[in-house]
Image (cartoon, rainbow, N blue to C red):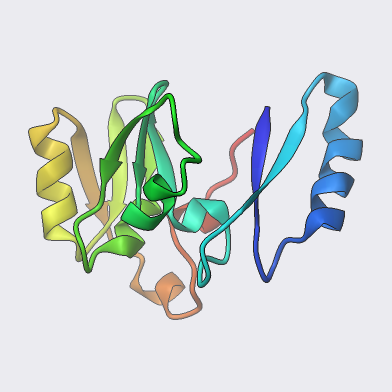
Length: 132
């Protein structure tokens, strides 16, 4: 099941359109309401392992990740939740030292990368990634 965040940018019609596109390949799509202020689901969370999610405290409290192990980004570093795991590495935007340290203590190989220019336009690592 693919979960799509419902926000100011993505509505139920968008979820239905995506399901029409990927349904023939056996995928189902579910819309999930997001806390106010999140543009996309990936703005507030990342998959660190098959059963582990890095997320903002607000998203964790929503219950969306029940059944998963969750790692909360430290207060004030909410944008760090938009990270990407690539094989054994976790790519994290520069400037979030507490999140970087937390992930390193949990055994993740963290690579901090500069994304300042993309951040000026509300862009993050998931926005700059093409994955299927």
